[in-house]
Image 1 (cartoon, helix red, strand yellow):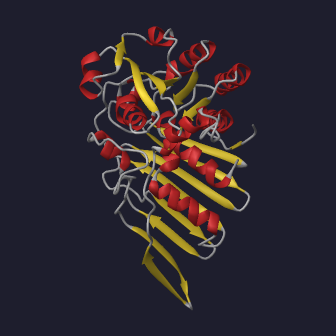
Image 2 (spheres, rainbow, N blue to C red):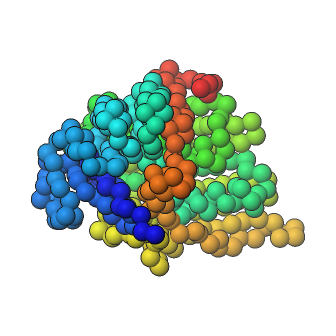
Image 3 (tube, rainbow, N blue to C red):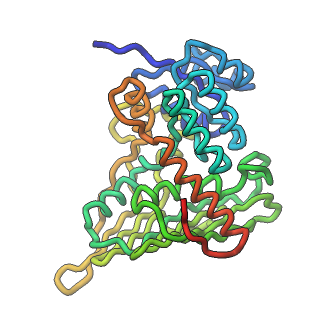
Length: 351
């Protein structure tokens, strides 16, 4: 039996909307990108000629024929737009970060529950191939008990660009841009930490918001170091995992973002070669009495899993791929981290 298409409205066609959301939605059978709220109709129609373009978000929300509203607008608009969409009876996907504050995130979670609407947050980095590989290594105990993880997301962008992500405004800065990805991955691997320490700084000439951070999450018998910066011409490994029986090192960022930026259109299920990462992945462990290193295969990335999961959840066939409670936990750590950096101290991680 062929199930009816779910009509999707996308709010925002900037970097996140155009690079990630629109192509991933369009690649999943059963979802149709029906409408986009954007001030640049020509840009939208160049990519998706059949989509209706509306000039503002509230015009899109007034459309009664949309099954799902996706919010990919600037961070400070996530909460008011998600609240309006839920109040209008829509199912909602919100780009990360979920909101600007923990209180806002909790309010949206309660509203979605009260209205019986699906509310999911776009933590797409759960489906990076290197993270899927890391998750399997930890779950299987391939390196024994994990004792230390270093997760670094380095870029080299020395020029400060005139965009809201780099502005001195609520929701700007690297901690709120990449922090949600790295925190969510840590929570998926190890659960809730005991303590958090964040050091954040503005290091670029002319910088207006934090463009470097280092966060330490303390677990009873494990430490997780999360780092990101905009002045790393020679980036650190993406992941370094140390365990009681060996180590794993992965170089370079997952290739899906660059492929999407270049205009690739992924399908679901993914076509052959999609998300395949050829960068160095090395496992080192004891063989007899000697340490031996070997290449370790990487799983392919599958960020389309998120929207396939949303589709199936709306049809009652699968759970929400990123439910509000999981995104609320990320917001709690984002907020604690911001306080830690401001007070220059380590904080107990209390929900």
